[in-house]
Length: 108
Length: 115
Image (cartoon, rainbow over all chains, first blue to last red; front, side, top):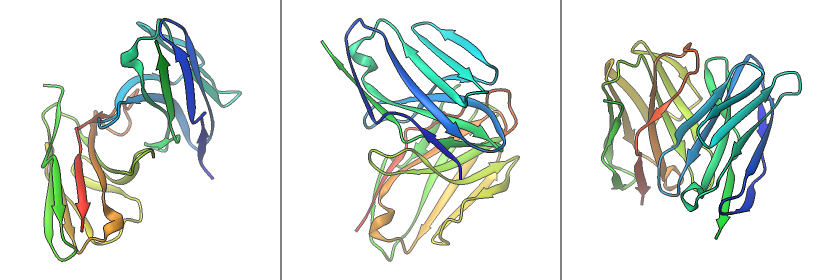
């Protein structure tokens, strides 16, 4: 079957760094996307990795290792507004296969 | 304009009603999607339109009927829904299904309650 696994919840302190891991098992894999969703809001795109390595966009970075079927999202200098759910999604056979989501809780 | 709009924001309907959800984008995107999302769950793909043609239908019950009148509009017609169909319905669009990053832009969603 097709599946992505990510932790259900991660807690961190404001100003710290947090890493959210994602392992995937999908066919026809093209790349790994990350989306952020605040409670009551819609998902918003954060990043996409098609090739191995690190992609950096401001405070957020995303990493992919195709050989390990593994990726992560790194959030630096955490702010209270980063409290949200984060989804990894595999771009497979022209559609997104979504992980269950990681709820990020940030404490002051 | 990098926005996907959806109407209505909230909808309450009975099991015998017929209603429609509407979605619009003016980014020139050629792929449009309907998702259903239950609380604390990821979005669940329902339908994909590519170049105004239905390309993916994820075994959705026939009480949900999608329509793509043109490249900017996407409708979801609802008929004889069940209470378990209550959810957030999200519309999204992307450049096309084979884009380099396939970034999907989501609308704010329609919160549907079926009584």
